[in-house]
Amino acid sequence: MSDFLPERGSLLDRRLPLFPDSTTLERGDLAIAGCSLEDLARQYGTPLYLYDRLTLDSAVEAYRGALGRYYPGESSLTYAGKAYLCTALAQWAGQLGLVVDCTGAGEMKMAAAGGLRREQILVHGVNKSPEDVQMALEHAGTLVVDHLDELQTLTNLYRAKPEPFPELWLRLRPGAAPDTHSYLQTGQEVSKFGMHAVEALKAAEICQQNDLPLTGLHFHLGSQMRDATPIAAALETALSLMAAIRDATGIVLNEICPGGGLGVAYHNNDLPQPDIDAAVRMLAAKMEAGCQQHRLPLPRLVLEPGRSIVARAGVCLYRVGAVKQAGERRWLILDGGLADNPRPALYKARYSCLPVKDVERTLSGAAWLGGPYCESGDVLIEAIALPDIQPGEVLAVPVSGAYQLSMASNYNGACRPAVLWLDDGTACLIQERELPEHLLRRDRRLLSP
Image 1 (tube, rainbow, N blue to C red):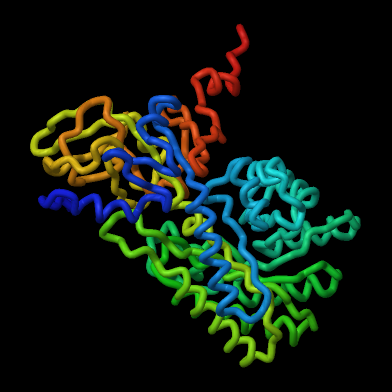
Image 2 (image 1 turned 90 degrees about the horizontal axis):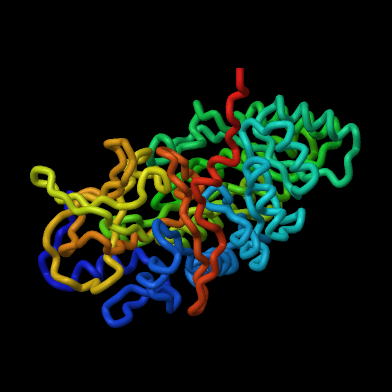
């Protein structure tokens, strides 16, 4: 479906709210943090990913402000590294006092390289490898136990008394499926993630018997939710489990993390953005009432926003290589797509875009934005209203900060894009563009017969 609007200027008003907070028009051209997007594309090439610090900082402040207003107990924020993580972003998280949720040795390495302290690294994983576990013992302050077999491994390691040993949380599977894409649901009864409440209670008993440092409970229902209602409902299951653990073992858990999952608007038809303030207010009220009902002290409330912190801070620039007509469709063929952003192919995610120059040109109808890769599913945006776009022009796709680069691939020998950090008029290269020779470094020739 096209969002074509014939009236001049109205489309700009509808799409600009999707862009980072520092986005401006400079003589009709797009700029972010005072940096011309056309100039950045010319200097660094395309595809090119941009991250705006102002938007990142504002999102963190929105969560912290709401927690301070509505939750009377202690609280903290954990940034979900799976949304997007690199050394520079880990540095930023450390500067703001965030904990970074890492899955696997690679993310832990990036977090440690960013200077995060042990207590700022939290480790997840449904099937942690021996390398993952060893690195968690070396770098992490908290480790989330996904299943009983993993707990047995940790019990054996703890008996060897390595110092220091991370605190443990148990991952609960609440048995709820929120209204989102099925691939984004993680807390339903048949999910591969976490433990049923009965298993989690058994895990707590094992921790008590072996004097393991069990301190918290974690669950995560899914991602890209419009409000926190499903999370608030699942808190009842989690608080009931905390009370059962207390009664059975005497362990009073002092931290609870109901995950994140609050979504963002990717397209102007998705606006307004989900309300962070309302979501936190709902969760805080549920926590207070539930703890009172179960006679539990208020634990530290740990929120784990990933997408809703970083997605809108990111913009991707693509250059149009060809314009072609195929039947009734006007195709704009870009220099990136499926390899750097698989979300449209995976989830039917719908994006928007604007040209970076002369943004308020008269619209000329709908266009389909396709990537260069050998897949019919390599379509970034369908039927979007745009002006007359010529080969060589640059298009800016907003809300590109989460679950794109972190899921990027080398399909068709694609090289991952460069990444810039934009802050108050400056652009800093935080990830170099991958080159074909980088792909060859991992390869080995066959031995001669």
